[in-house]
Amino acid sequence: MTPPFNGQAVRAILRYEMSRARRTLGQSILSPVLSTVLYFVVFGAAIGSRIPAVGAVSYAAFIVPGLIMQTVLAQSISFAAFAIYFPRFTGTIYEILSAPVSFVEVIIGYVGAAALKSAATGLIILFISFFFVPLRILHPFCMIGFLGLTCAAFSLLGFIIGIWADGFEQLQLIPLLVITPLSFLGGSFYSIKMLPPFWQKLSLANPVVYLISGFRWSFYGHADVAVGVSLSVIGAFFAVCLCVTAWIFKTGYRLRN
Image (cartoon, rainbow, N blue to C red; front, top):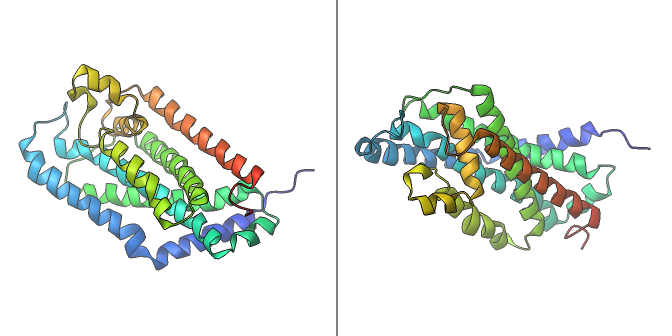
């Protein structure tokens, strides 16, 4: 018989993680927001005035979806990785494993909290961007959908990294050496259609291109790749991360030693 869903455990994890975010508000929310605002000032105002419009959109407005997505990717991984790493580091993870809580409820609690925090960061940046550039959002519900799915998928990736990491250095290894370069090369500051044909094809091997392209489409109605393809890539990445996380809990990889 399948045990009933333990909503109380999920709420407890969510409350704890969200209260931790409130205690570290400057580091968890304000810092990435201020960093992104600097991009608006430097690229949007100083450099953007010297760059022609990209399609029918000014360069300052064009980079907004890319900057939001770039910040959301990094914050989703960071929030989820540190959230599960600290219970492992302090040993309190064993209390969770011994409690009547399934791996689905643990994932919903930790990954859900990380996704909520990173989505809130992205929405704050979006709100602030209206003060710097003229924005329009043609498909607001699609924008929320892309944002939520991306936050959930990369929070799952951060959860996996937090379980895999043996130290604080490894927590930052994949975000710094893999995610950050892919974000900068994923079309945050340019359209891949501006590149020569060879580099356009090479850019399609970068999964971040699909995330940024789909998110930008929800704003302006045009994208570097088809929206359906972008959505399929995000969904496939989410499914893979979910399967890896289920395998971790099934085998006890780095949880029971």
